[in-house]
Image 1 (cartoon, rainbow, N blue to C red):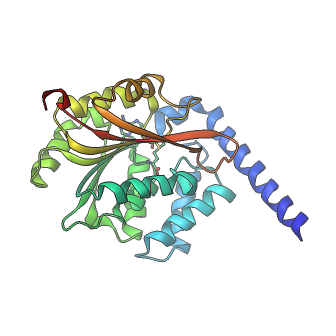
Image 2: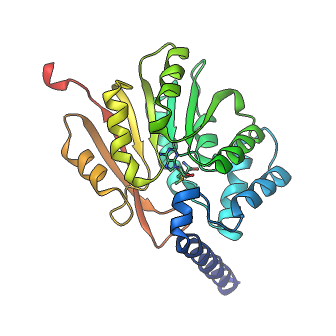
Length: 261
Ligand SMILES: C[S@@+](CC[C@H](N)C(=O)[O-])C[C@H]1O[C@@H](n2cnc3c(N)ncnc32)[C@H](O)[C@@H]1O
């Protein structure tokens, strides 16, 4: 019995690794389109609509996790690093949240289902029109459309939408920022947020894929060398659905103008 379970787990791990490598072989396509190129994201959507309980975010997340492990690896934050994001949401208890990199809506569902403050909302940016469409349907299926504003386009090209959202939310800055798009955009987009005064005292800045192998070298260095601006804790884990691939998440608190206090 134990041997059977072990073999099953081994087969599943081999499958996920193969599926991950298959997505990575098409790296150029992945970076350009945000998709693996074999239709797995669209198939996942159909599977979620068919099998996840409507209006139940947890059921949607569970189905997405199971799909990524058994049918096609997906770049969701996933069920290993997800709890680190949950803990950060619990710590900051935000009202106004921004996400860079929606993909298929997994982390948007995870975040929006944990926004407890009256009138709290998430705005999420996705460059790929296909992913944007999938994510909207996933968020709708989870019953969270009223909590999420989905924007199609690159964050740095849609700054006006972020500014308008802040205005409508009656605030000047985000309480919680989740950075999870392409790693070469982490540093410039963080600086865009900062220079546009969209970060305030105590804003939580959470970055996924910060591991030494795959993480953004410039932003990793920045969070480690600017303690006066970002008070950071790094949580080590593994890349989504790949127990053998080390990765980490950084959770930083923005501390502007500390030198003047
Ligand atoms: C790692 S996935 C996001 C995963 C998602 N946060 C989750 O955990 O479910 C990265 C996504 O960022 C998108 N992306 C890349 N660069 C972007 C940019 N500058 N603005 C908005 N989206 C971007 C890609 O198309 C891709 O879908």
